[in-house]
Image (tube, rainbow, N blue to C red; front, side, top):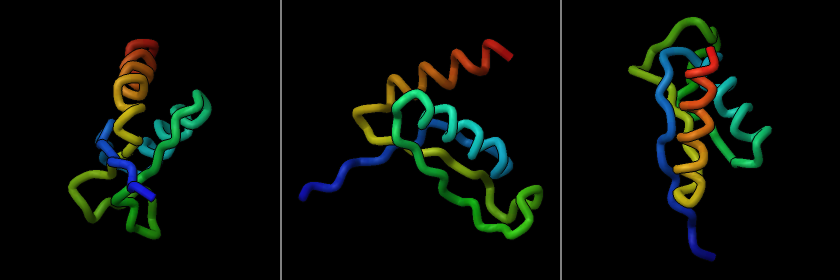
Length: 73
């Protein structure tokens, strides 16, 4: 079985924002995962950023959804 390539579709400075973005992508049919969420305290970040990754074939659709969501706010 061939592994799918994952691409970073967003970078966030807190885990809550990353999980919200990943949840929105999943609600729209795009599999997404959060990486770098290592703290037991979500508001404390010991890494540079928390990232959301998607499969390479979903990258453009995911990027468009996140951009549309940012403009709506």
